[in-house]
Length: 231
Ligand SMILES: CC(C)(COP(=O)(O)OP(=O)(O)OC[C@H]1O[C@@H](n2cnc3c(N)ncnc32)[C@H](O)[C@@H]1OP(=O)(O)O)[C@@H](O)C(=O)NCCC(=O)NCCS
Image 1: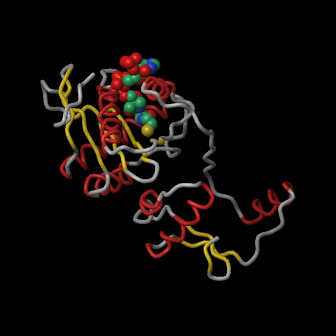
Image 2 (image 1 turned 120 degrees about the vertical axis):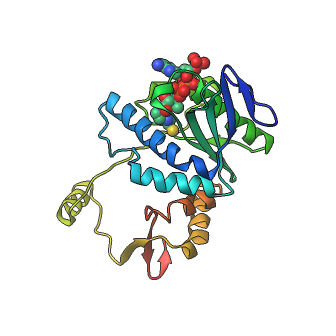
């Protein structure tokens, strides 16, 4: 494992350094291939919790050029090749992710070195806690996170697919839900972030402003509005 000093670290043939915008394209290929390989290994359809090359490019461009994102890469000292990467961002609760290793370098300690570097950075900022998410089917990342002291806190489900209006009404009826009326769902805009964050604080007890804002550029953030107010 790489040791982490004030200038990040070197050890075990692995050097850890901060990401820079030039890393965006190689990291996009790496993250896309890395998650795809894992998904295929456990029969998760490629589009579920996956990163296409196109979405990965946007994400990595955004992550490597956003000053509040803290990213590191693991580099093989002998060849200079990128082995793994990972990101962290601050908030009331700090968040780590995504963390990923190049398929050619998996199992060589690079993922762990990246995690250690990110945790060191969080510790140096006296954060109260760190959160991360992982797919239940991945015992490798689970082993990695557990060995670094993370404990499972909650389980959540990601449902993906298209539902017709008829199917939605039928599902609502069978669950005994009344049809929702007067609610408009639209894409989130920057002007909504403050309000959404207040809502998050009220329901979850902590701030997630940066995370909420993060999905606006790729159109993945939505709001439900009733009578002009975000619900
Ligand atoms: C999870 C991932 C980042 C780990 O990176 P890696 O460089 O392959 O892992 P490392 O070699 O640093 O090993 C770290 C730990 O993972 C676990 N691990 C690694 N390979 C493993 C395997 N084949 N079986 C079981 N556990 C394994 C071990 O706990 C290991 O720690 P140890 O060496 O102290 O025992 C990498 O597998 C990956 O990119 N997976 C796809 C993307 C992903 O799922 N990311 C995590 C969710 S955000």
